[in-house]
Amino acid sequence: MSTRAAPFLAGQPGIQRFPGKELELFIKRDFLSLEECVGLMARIDANRRPSTIADDMGYEAFRTSETCDLDDADPFIATINGKLATFAGIDPAYGEPLQGQRYAVGQEFKAHTDYFEPQGGDYETYCGRSGNRTWTLMVYLNAPGAGGATRFTRINKIIQPEPGKLLAWNNRLPDGAVNGASLHHGMKVRAGTKYIITKWYREQVWVG
Image 1 (cartoon, rainbow, N blue to C red):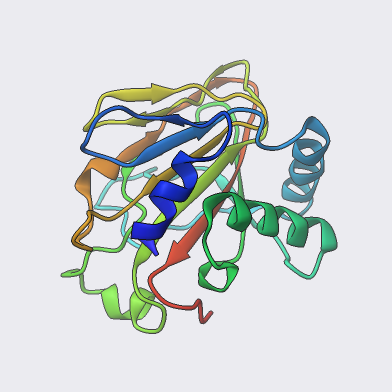
Image 2 (image 1 turned 135 degrees about the vertical axis):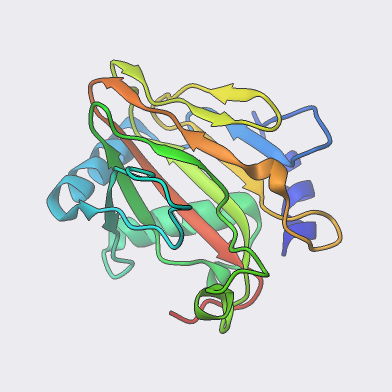
């Protein structure tokens, strides 16, 4: 999966690629329309719940956002899922269910990786049936009043929220090992509210 997605993304119109070799990272502005962003934010507001995390690394308030599981049976959500898979060139069967996240003032997601540590005690629980995460596709749905940027801490890259802006990155290295350079921090919102959607893809067909 990961070896096919990078060249496909690189050929998309209007795509920007992070120039460093440490991480395959792409940015596409205006991936979603304002109407699509509004529809997603409304669904997130209607069904949000406190976010969870597999491993908080012993920190309090490691992830303080709210999460919404977006239902693929909703034709609107199915369309968004299809748009993401087509853009990345990834078979949608490998995708986890689409999630939305909402960050109020003071909320954040401290520096973390999206993959599961292969040597971790919970690896089999989360990866036993579908393998580890490969690509992450994340889309900002709005721009909060202040704060809420995404900082890739090991490559010193900060990306500011803009409505409809997509980020796509590979959580793995060319040899299939996990890539620690994908470590990223959903920085604290200082004013307003931040909304995003996140789509994760797996090594094998997703089995929930």
